[in-house]
Image 1 (cartoon, rainbow, N blue to C red):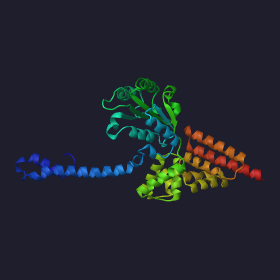
Image 2: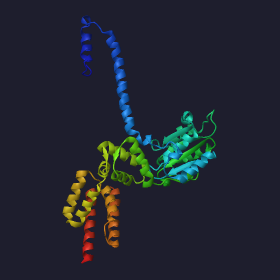
Image 3: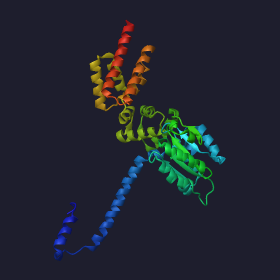
Image 4: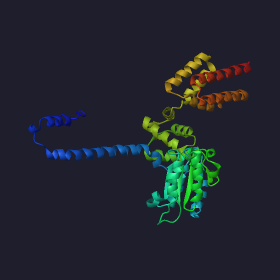
Length: 376
């Protein structure tokens, strides 16, 4: 017998006693599967709709036109001129994540092609999914080498995260770009320009997308807050902008996750949701490190770190910002910053966090002793 539903025992009993079956209810047996299927469809639609509502807010507010983009106006004006003069070159967009690289080229594509011809004229690939030479010899070559019968102009290939492509794949792509320039334009998108081979760089017009400024991010965040009816205060908005570091995508994700987790978006809920230490926690860490003995300070910081699940790297980042507000003598501040940089470097190398935490406390204890000795 499979499962434990109500129909299973009846089926087994029917097989054993075929002559004593009760009258069949044909209508019920024929209609139930349809009703169940309709119920599954309705329920699935609700679940999918809710999932789409939650998960696609970054895509929902992605700019659809070049005029909707909020930054890099000099780059946009240059690209707009290329499009209007029908002289779009191969493009290479590079810069940190969430700065508008993909949104810019997608807006260009929507301006170049009508909706019904978009899929036949644009090939969008994420190079990190398949980073080997096969993706160049397969879908890229196949798409670039064919022409459309009823459409004049060039096709567009968008390779996102191109810096993840292998050396062989990039060399193969160079030849494809050379061979099909008349028929196809390429746009390479990457975070690190140094990971793109010089031969590809020389074949593209390069544009650097820098981090967005708070003045550019806040109006867009306020628009999303208004559209989604999110409860947020000025402290929460400032915390989102600070933690996102010019990454618009990250700021929208922080806004969404915090509002869904806590309802109200404040400075404390933003820092808690992202796992960053609160300002009050950093003030306590600095106070313990400078005013208590080594053992007590270490134990209290370790207890706080364990209780709130904080990463030492995040603590170092926030401590670094706070150090500049403390009235240390310049020479002492410089020495402390160098020691903290060494700790961060060792953390990146995979050393034990507890050992590096003790090193951080020791650095502050040494600073305290130096300040006291200078004062006396």
